[in-house]
Image 1 (cartoon, helix red, strand yellow):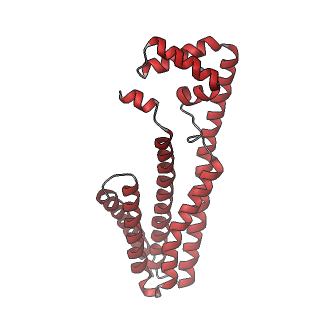
Image 2 (image 1 turned 180 degrees about the vertical axis):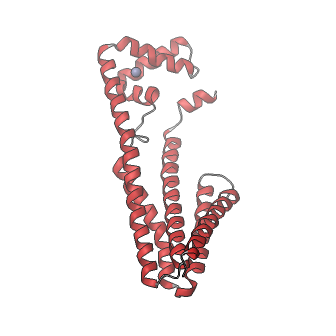
Image 3 (image 1 turned 30 degrees about the horizontal axis):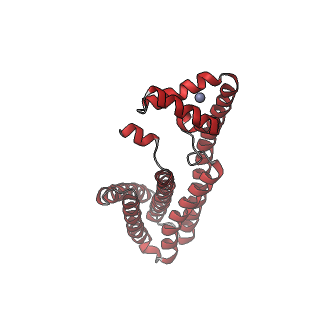
Length: 235
Ligand SMILES: [Zn+2]
């Protein structure tokens, strides 16, 4: 029953899944931006760097991080898009040359999902008459419009999420008195990380405590390590 439910899931469900993917990616990007930029600022500030140096480090972290997120996301999503495209080209060729074996291939997939022989065959024939490549893409390769890889969008979204996250500790460093920079940046960043973790957990339908605590734990670790290293260079 579960298997067939998954196979015929409605489009609302699919859209919710796609939204979750975007939300998850944005939350992760913003987490990265907050954590790496605040740790960098704390490290530099712990070495008693002047305000201009701290701000330069923060701005560099924002730009470098956003660019590296964009590049990483573009490369990974592009290669996914390439392999989806290659799969579709091969599928198109197979549909052109061996229609009958493609029908039985699709019918086999529907049998696995719980249809009996006759019904599986009828469904395969009917769906292939309607949109042969579309149904093979969806049910055999698992490619739908929703999951189809979009490299530029993914790159921009990750870069923006990182930059939005990074701007919080950076602004805090700008507004805070120099001798309090480490403290204010770590407190503001931990609060933002906790809020983000809670929002992400609630959106994902899980209890907010664990994710928030996990992200706070790793946030404290990162900030402690860079602050210790910064203090080593403090002369
Ligand atoms: Zn096929």
